[in-house]
Image (tube, rainbow, N blue to C red):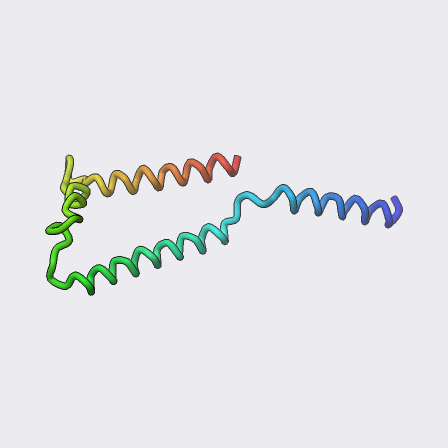
Length: 98
């Protein structure tokens, strides 16, 4: 095989691989998860400083109290919602990897 054919084949394979591999990126997912966690923590800190001593369940946010009221065996709706969302994301990642 000549060097020219080898380089052409290598270039074609590299181009095909680059075009097809734009799906699953673990580093990007880790960055996105860290950014999401930082947003949740910042929101919690903000609410904690703004509402010092108040409860958010007095005003228009009172409907959120239903999310933290235990449903059965001490499990509340918020925990179930988080489990469903995490399960859905894990399922989508698992399907994409196959």
